[in-house]
Length: 303
Image (cartoon, rainbow, N blue to C red; front, side, top):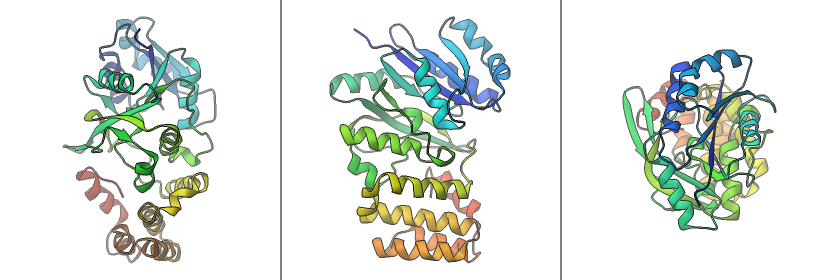
């Protein structure tokens, strides 16, 4: 018997064309019985979003609902609102600025069926930035907690998540929603490795993200994830990466003293951590932080 699938798409209602593309790509997935879609509006633009997805609602009657966020404001609360509204066997996420590619759902369902103990599945992504598209692969068919400890693994992206409903819930205490998806994957992988399809089956659009340069939020999110998962600091490579990011984000805010402090910690954890000289260059005013991110995003990478 084929499992039923529900998809949660959080939105703020300010990018209608991207939202329409995301909803249509989800509905185009081939799955017996189709998929149910819950678009959750984080804000007061519910009526506007209803109008934005009206065509999709008409083409797939009974399959698309638009709801206001009924939990904490922000991305985790919006996702939990969608999970709570669904009665399907499985739940998937898709951000409103991303797009599932053909075959995404079928490939992940096959991966879950091949590993009955798995509760959670992901897949590789294709990063779109400006006019470039760069595939990001994991090089594995299973993602363990050790993988996610040593690296954030950008290809284990929230828009690829497919999991058994009720097995995990996003943590609404994440500051500004930062790293709640990494936390979700870490918790799931701590019980059983994630089933992973190492093909780029989701297009992730980085240029539309509202979070890329919210430096203070990113700092708070990293400090939050370290407090929730202390073992992240026990892996030298993983710890150095996080400390290097903290150095960079503090440098972007002009906090030179904090940037140097985190840079020293990064080098102490792992000599040669590549984010340290970048962070110090930003702290010294040699290069703007936004220019660094733009150069990295062009290559499908983040800081």
